[in-house]
Image (cartoon, rainbow, N blue to C red):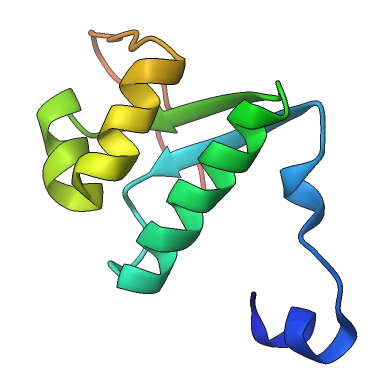
Length: 95
């Protein structure tokens, strides 16, 4: 649990929403604590039948090397990888 959860006894709301979107996985600072939390979140959501959509600018092999076998195997077991190729669709000059 995070520090506020330890103080209040609350559990993360993201665990129980119908659809959770994790956008741009891989840009966060590398942290063993995050990796464990991500694995636990994915496992909880899968066992509860909840959908999780993840976007990342990481190649599939980079996910395994960054997050480890547990997270990579969980992602492979629970879903599919859709590779999107082509030029960036970000607006030029956008903030």
